[in-house]
Structures are given as C-alpha cells and as structure tokens.
Image (cartoon, rainbow, N blue to C red; front, side):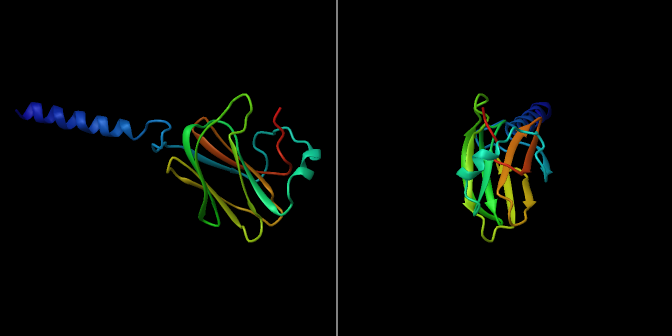
Length: 149
C-alpha cells in the first residue's frame, strides 16, 4: 500500500512539474532576459521609412520567435498591450505596439506571465524591438525603423 501511495505521489509531482513548462497557450515559459541599448541583431534599416512614423510616438516592434505566446507590453509599469502572438518567419514581424511618447520613461515586456524585461528610455527613443530566441527574450533600442523584406 505504501509503495502504491508513493508511486501515486511521485507521478502527480512529475505531471504537475511538466505541465508548467509547456510552450505557448498562456503557460509560463522560463526564459532569460537581454536588454540592448542598441540593435542586438543588426537589422536592416532604411531612413526613408522614418517619415511614415510619428516622432511623437513610441513603437515596439514585436518580431520573431513567438508560438502562441501571450505577449504583454507595459508603459510606465501599466499594462497597455496584451495579445496571443505567433511569429511569421517569412515576414519577421508579429505585431506593433504604438503609444504616445509623452511621459513614457520605461517599457516592460512579459511573455506568458514570465519575468518582466524592463527597460528605461530617454525622450527621443522612438523605436524598440522584441524577439525571442534561444530561450532569451530580447528588447533592443533601435536608431531607425526596422526594415522587413
């Protein structure tokens, strides 16, 4: 009887531990955080596109690596944007969060209720991108509008 009870308890623990690690669908995913005050991926940029974007707005380009993940964006620690996203590897862009730049001094990004990637910005920072690759959520400050070909 004790062996049967022990087997049941161990099976329950293993099942509980494994379900919390499932990818996507709103489950918590453990990941590292990388903050770059430059473009970590050296993406192509074209300054000619910048005229299409308001200098008074902040744009967070949510790019690659998401598979049915809930991505939440915070401005000044207030939730602004939350969507379930799946990246399209052909396009390289999942979605864009846009907000007035006035009064914004921090941006946070969270995936599947995991750790918050928090970055402080200066006025005049208009473009950021977010990627998930190799178990790392990366937030980068960009000098230019990213170009997707």
